[in-house]
Every structure is written in structure tokens, then in C-alpha cells.
Length: 320
Ligand SMILES: [Mg+2]
Image (cartoon, rainbow, N blue to C red):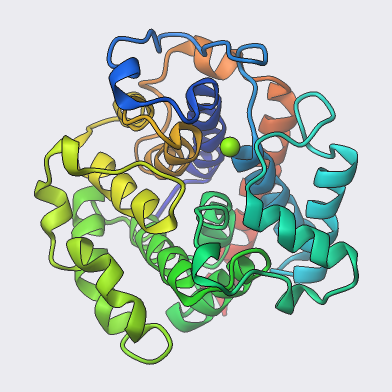
């Protein structure tokens, strides 16, 4: 049973990973081998600046505890305020938005209903929904698996509706619920890989399974670093996150390795940071990482409130 302070550390882990990787977004791996990650680095923005990954994760957490459930209309409204008004941002401006997310939010603005806003094309499979889904995975971690998957898919579809993206989000959710249930991290990773194909044995998901073969066959866990791709493609991000989480033993090592892989540094480190924060907590993180986050108080307050409300929800579920 996951303690509620681990829920706080999971969300803050996303923010730390994002802030650690954001200055290096798009940089090739070779340039990052020796870069100093003992403090949050400066990029175009001051150290501790976090981007879309953190903003949309925390906005999702806030929407969940204020609505008491996944409410796509509420979520869509908050995402639009982020884009248009700089709501829940370090400096009043939405940073790092991806193409598919922007296009979906602009469709929402024009009145397209949230259920139909997300891109459904094969090119709409960036990691923009995976990066923000940790709060949904946690919120439904103790509900029946089918309900949890439905909510993860719905939440992804707001911006990313292609079945390949939904599969990535569902697998991520499965991993998170195993950790919440008290499984060891490596066990949770291996079990998720093994159960994935059975979870998605029907159309339209079945047709997507081949993209995840290295995970389902377990090869990803043995892969050499040069074969791991950290791009903005959702399949790459999910596989790279599993690879990093399998071969690191604490939070700090996980997010550092995620950043050093280059490419989509902030998103991979945010995804890894969330899971590693949930499992290990943040004890291995240098104090300057947490202290250095822009708007740290806002992040901490939101994370604590999310953890408190989710703790209550879990108690209610237990008493049913
Ligand atoms: Mg980002």
C-alpha cells in the first residue's frame, strides 16, 4: 500500500525530472555525457523552470481532486487556460507545447467536444499524453482495471486519440497500479511487459501491439544504451522509460540517466521521475533540486492536496 507522502513525491518527481531535462531538450546524447546535473541547470530560462510536462500533470491532478473524478470538460477548460492565459506556469507563459496538443487545444477552443478533440492520425503519436497521465493512473490505481484503462484512454484522447497512444498510456497505468499495490519496481516492469498483449488483444489495439514488441518480448530490459531512442514518439518514450527504470536503483540515478539519453530529455525525465518518485521517494535527490524548482510552493501545495484527497478516496473504496 503506497503511503500518501509517496504520492507527493511522485508528482514532485515529475517536476524535478522536467526541470532537470528542459534546458537540454533536443540535444544529442554525446553532448550530455559529462554535463553537471548536481544542480538544476539553466537554459533559455532560469534554473528550475519546468515546462508542459509538469504544468499539464499538475493541472490534471488539480482537476481530478476538485471534480472528484476525471471530468474531460473541466480538464479541457484548464488546459485551455494554460495555453491562453499562462495558468499554472512558472512565468505566466505556457512552455514547451507539442504540435498535437496545440492542435487539439485549438479544436477545443473552436467548440469541438473534448471526446473528439484529440488527433487520431498515425502522426499524432507524440508523447504529449503519456507525459501528463500520472495523476490519472494514480487516481484510478485501486479501481477495477477496466475502469482505470477507460479513464486513461479518455484522458489521453483529449489530445492524443490514436490507439497506439492509448496503449502506451494503458501500459503506463498498469505499471503504476502495480507499484501502488506494493510490487517491487522490477517485478512491476516485467509483469506489465508480460501482461500487455493480453490487455490489448482486441481491435483496434491488437494492430498496434507490434510497435511494442521489444517490451512484450522482454528484450528492452537487456538492450544496450545505443539502441535506446529518446525521441518525442510515444513508443520510444515508453520503452526508454522502462529501460531506465529497470537499470537504476534510486530516483536521482533514474532522472539523470533519462536526461543523459538526450533527445526529449524533459519528457523522458518527467515520466521516469514520476514513477521513480512514487517507488523510491526523493531521498536520493540533492536538496537543491527540490529547493530550486520555480513556484515550488504552488507545486507542493497542489501535490499535497492531491495526495490528501486521493488518500480519502482510497479509504472510501476500502470501506465499500
Ligand atoms: Mg516539456
